[in-house]
Length: 88
Image (cartoon, rainbow, N blue to C red):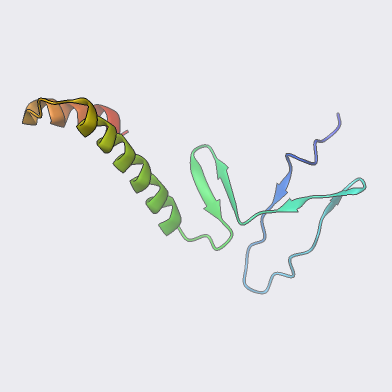
């Protein structure tokens, strides 16, 4: 089975990492600063604040869609929409 080097990525962890260039056959593997796996964004610094910022942006987008779509902003209805669309 052949590997697709265009889909392969490498992450370098640690402050004293040399950040070597890895080869797969005759092609080099691209080094990235972040990778998304199973909905979790992993950064090379291993700090989770960027994950929180991304999740907050996504929930704010959903809240904006809800507020633009619904004219009647009854508290019970808005709470149900928030619980079913934003919280998951």
